[in-house]
Amino acid sequence: MTSPADRDDVALIILGATGDLTSRLLLPGLAGALAAHDLPRVTLVGSSHSEHSTDEWRSIVREGLAGAALDEDEVEDLVARAAWHTADATDADDLRALFETAREAAGPDAAPVLYFALGPGITREAVGALAGLEDLPDGLRLALEKPFGEDEESARELNAVLADVVEEDRVFRVDHFLGESMVTALLGLRTANRLLGRVWGGRDVERVDVVVDETIALEGRAEFYDGTGALKDMVQSHLLQVLAMAALEPPERLRPQELHDAVVEVLRATRVWQDDPVAASRRARYTAGEVDGERIPAYAEEEGVDPGLRTETLAEVTLAVDTERWRGVPFRLRSGKALGRKRWEVALTLRAPEDVPEGLSPAEGRDRIVVGLDPREVRIELAVDGADTPFDAERRTLAADLGEEQVDAYGEVLRGILTGQTLLSVRGDAAEECWRILAPVLAAWEAEEVPLDEYPAGSAGPAGWG
Image (tube, rainbow, N blue to C red; front, side):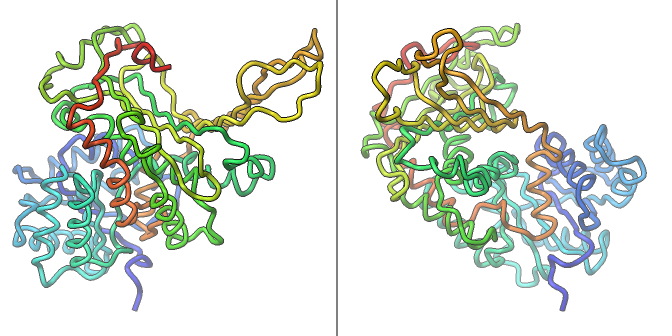
């Protein structure tokens, strides 16, 4: 019998299809993936609790694909085959009827993929409803957006329910940062490059910084962001996945099972620096300021924000990775909004050189290896002899611009989902470990043991953070 991953057609069923995620990320990402790769034929089946028609859904699809690399005939083919079914995602009977609509639209042999473009609470209820169905479609795959639970216990409970519905290799926990080409390229830089591979560890590295600073502010997303904040939105998921790719022991084979095992191994070895969540974490939120010439109101004054929730827009946590390679090296994870410049990078600061000859003046600072995640680049900042004073070292930068991604992060993630390849998915035990790692920090913040600092929008962060 042909496995679901080998089928030529896919019915991509999107729950919450009229939401921002679908139009802003999923549909453009799908178009990019289809244009760049030889992928299965896709039938888009939209669904939400609110009443819509197939024509309305087809208009959403056409608009979401506008400006994509797909040619006009391909776009019109996707639009013409798109189908709609109004359903309550938490109702088992509605889901059964939705699957039947997908079967009629895409054909009986199409591999069904159920994409939860929903909030975490509704997603949990919908998964519970699926667990009550005895006649699920053959080969069903599930794609879930983060967060995967709200803490370690709820993540474990969600994983247990998912296991009752489908096998783990048919669950795709979407962390689109794993679709960023430079995140996965971290492994290649280490293993395919003799120069970098020799210094990629605690013997030569003094500290590691994983930074995702953004210039964008709240941008009308208070309903999602307020009460979640930078720690849960970015650090708990995205940045811990980046840390894992930077710190794991390279597997012998680049296959899902081996890579996921390596990720979980390094996450299990990760904890808060010196087991002190108060000293090892900082948080802040932006006040009024200016970013790229645009006036930004204080976060507490943004529409839809409840100031009493004390939601942070900048989070920083220092972690230890207790493996033989990295023991004793601090990993600082930082992410925030409304900052003065965009900075997405993994930076390895090297230890001071040993046995510097007398008479040679060292350069200020440290040598660094910087992997830019967006834009894609690699920089090596190192000391060289000065042009005018050959025995006084100066710091220079060697940079390689690796160009733009051919397919965006969501496109790469969707490519894996459509082909049944879980390499860029988060495995269930990895999701649980991410919550475990940050549990002490979350508890310290909830107990108000860590102050909520402030920084003007457009600045580098709070004064004194460095």
